[in-house]
Amino acid sequence: MIRINDRLALDPAEIEFRFLRAQGPGGQNVNKLETAVQLRFDVRQSPALSAAVRARLERLAGRRLTKDGVLVITAQTQRSQERNRQEALDRLVELVRQAATPPKPRTPTKPTKASKIRHQEAKMHRARRKSLRAKPRDET
Image (tube, rainbow, N blue to C red; front, side, top):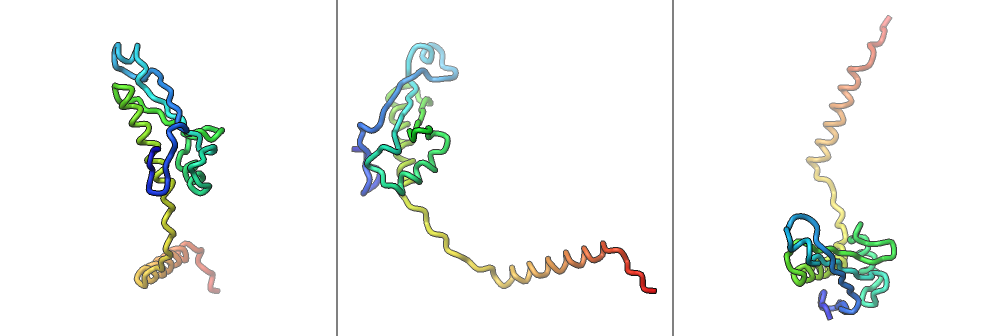
């Protein structure tokens, strides 16, 4: 089991790895070895995730989530397949850990007295400026 936190663990059988050739420069190593790793994790079918965690994970995943609800993480910065595999797994664990921690509720705040006064003064200043733009009244 892959531990996310004290209450959540993922089954390694739910995670699928595909190996492909890495992009970019690197000479012969890049051209003949499949060192890049594509990790696939089905978010919608995972029994380990609760509905709230699943919803937050889908929102956090963004473009990495397919229409079918499969999270795809690609790692290709390392030279070895095993290190890329570990990096992709670490990124998945971090993403699920972020989704597992509920967001802090917003604490409503009040504006300070000084900021209220500044706001009123700015409004009066703008009103005065706009009143100067008006056409002069004819007093005859």
